[in-house]
Image 1 (tube, rainbow, N blue to C red):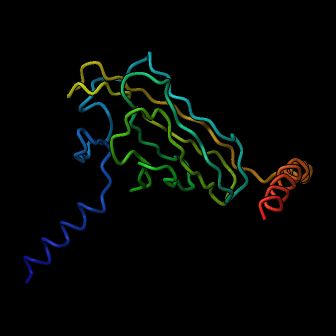
Image 2 (spheres, one colour):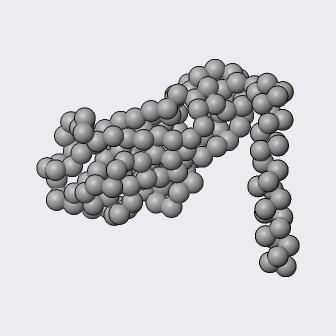
Length: 183
């Protein structure tokens, strides 16, 4: 009985632990790109786009990408300094505070991740490692690099919040009109 519980616990840990690298669809927890894909490439530019300021506790989407080269892209993203990340794109997963690819994504060169700021003001950094793979069953020809975006977490001034609301009014009116037209 004790042996079967150990086997069951081990199996659950394997299923619940995300793999950061997925060569040929097999999950291998490598902790990054280096073990299988050589050193980082200065030629590959990782872009991390999204708001550089969030209110405490606010949530926003960020897009991490590389130029469309080779066969496809893989990634791992982590938030340093507090807050949380979530996997929001198809083919991604969350585990241990890291969002990463969960399968091969040929032809995909960017992914959305969701950042929720901590409830206290400060600075957080969205760190990303991305890999462009060439499908040659090895490190030869693959490229990887890192990028990051510093996000300031601060309470907006009253005027900023009002300007944001005024800016969203046309968007809200357009949504309401589209819903009315569809009904």
